[in-house]
Image: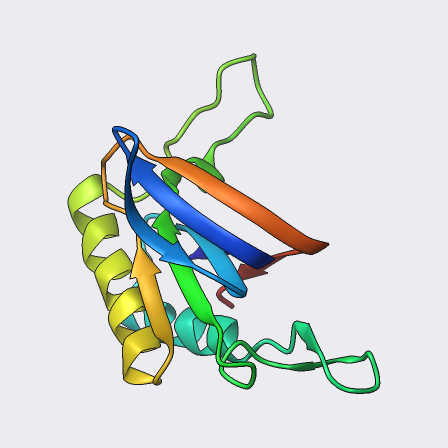
Length: 146
């Protein structure tokens, strides 16, 4: 699994111009699932994202997690994170998990975040979404399962 994590001052996801999920200060996680990923990968990645120290403490050091600041997570499914652009001009998506498998693991990821006590908003799997991200910093990291 692969997560593009962005620290944000606010973010929201819209479908047909209607907001369906929004957070204030927190992180946006764009989540990609590849073939062969398992539920334990979803749990590991959720724990990693929830506990990344991306927010400054009183000394200005990135020492606080999203939970420490009382922030939220906007989790958005993003199969294109497994797009392969090495050959030709059109990305190939053969590494991405099939939709049914990916959706199950996306839901497991969200459930693991919620079980950890994090406030979570979500996108909609297989929907055409607009994602508004106000990146804070900017701080953006790619996190992958081992």
